[in-house]
Image (tube, rainbow, N blue to C red; front, side, top):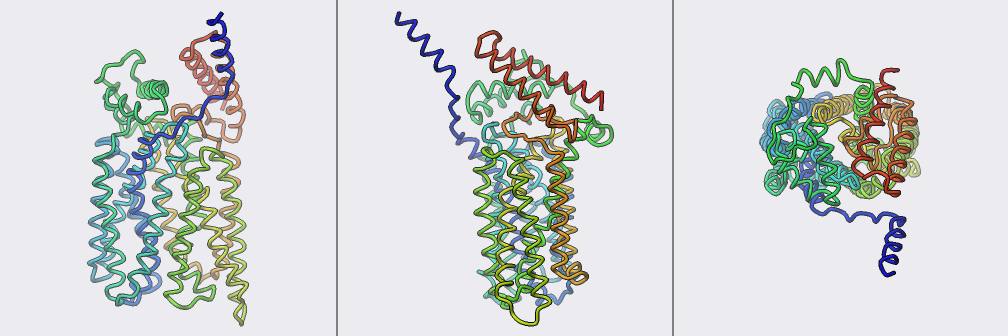
Length: 541
């Protein structure tokens, strides 16, 4: 009788909603330390917006030279991001971060001791290579360490630290602005070497990526990392099984050290990713590259790098007041990226992204309108100045709550394991090229078509981005990294695929609840069915 009651209670508990797993503190610590590398880029962006005011006075350079100096780091970072994919596959994600920190450290010191424009440009080159390394490896590492339940939260950490770095740069501008013109900008740039030291030391406390360990045949080490970074031992087993399958390792192979089947060479990876991809990989590449392009094409670097110029056009004349306003931009940007980290795994990537970009379009239009009115007015219009300041703050807040972090979260989780490092490198390269074009053309664009028209142009590009995201990008919340490929391949018809996957999971859950099929078997059958549907659809396409 007592046993029957216990069984009845157990059956009732089966229908209870699953408890939300506790946040994995070890995974948080790992991603926190890895994301320190993103401070390097953020600090450089923030500090250069103020330092350039004093560099221009000290070195007597033109506006064109200013544009090149500000934006060239993004072009230089291509060398780092291009090399980072191969480097991270060769020596691991962890030690690639040490390489990034060391290169940026040297670049920051060179900029701080620069005596001429050419010397400063060389320092920018070295620092840019370090930034490229950091930008590629941090999102990849965090995506590969994070459990699915909190991957959005954890993978947004690099963007959080970029924003924190920008704020540090703005504060540095205000702190050192009281020094002489000759010293102020050198201290602003040279002090950036300090975060790279912390990054290099932090690597000692980080484990290697479990996916990289599996690709090296180190199953025992990967298992230990997954046990620590997963929400449960069962999830760790499922994650290891998925990674082994992606790496081509037999499911029943459980030795600590195994021989990994020969992987595609670099040329084969490029062939599979770019030159002759399957429809699914082509869809992934288009969305992964597209989100990086539109993140920068919508004008964020124009606002962040040239905010003193924008505030000057809005009617603020004092250099110190301009720098204080930029600090307000940094504070708002950082606060809202923190809000976004807690929303990514609740609201989903897609809904948050569409809301963010829609708001960016509206704020850019209003900013452009305010700047145009001020430019054509002969008297000081307080309401228009207030509108411009409010719209700059609104724009960076809306960017930080969606477009900023989701770009890195989304692009780092959609590429298949065999193509992930190279795919993310391509995305980062597009991101940096677009950023370089925006930052190296803003002053010339402002002179050619007025600053108001420049922001109307950015608003139009953001509107195109909104259509692109709505049409082509499926929701990836809650999917394992190894499931991503099943969501792609039908382009704008991806919603039908998502419904099929949802139905298969519902069927699996019902089967498990009824006790007809063991969980592992059900999961395998479900994935086989999805892959069959994927293959059939790809043939049709």
